[in-house]
Length: 258
Image (cartoon, rainbow, N blue to C red):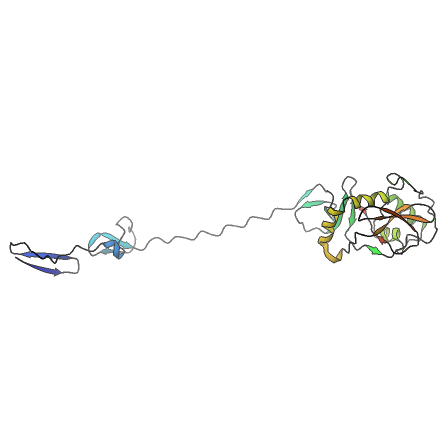
């Protein structure tokens, strides 16, 4: 018997002539359609352009559906700032509120006594103002040699009394504060600031050099010791000292009620 290998465009096969079996067959199995990319069937390619595998018409290749890129997720909206109770070191806005967030409202102060709604205005502290001319007594303002928690403890009331006696200008400490709508803090108020100085520093330094917040020096209080002396407070440790009213090497810090 003789075998003839026939080639067509569809397949490769063997044709046997005669009856004797071949002792050296040259027939080969058909190629695997998957090796040539024909991995789909009729249902996969329904309605799509396709090619049939020449070795097995049930295997097809067709263009798969385009996978659509999902749209980018919308960014989460920024939460609206919400007014919250003020605490020591909170930033007060021009509407008198403290916020969780950063509203488009001017920052005007740093809270040091939330219970009595007292704050330090965000402005430069001054160095070199006198308290008053020497040995000028403020008759409405009590003398406080001791007990600063109760004697002369209301800086706003003290400032009003000082300004009513002294000329209304800004070349002395209480006048400088009153002219801006603030008051000169009392010993008790300055000691409250000193007690919470770390929280206040954290907020104050966030304003950089514009704040010019010198927190390790003596500051004038509005508490009068006697006709000649006034009590000053070191904000670093809350310690007190006495200075003549015309002494100039002391800082002036104002406060206000928000």
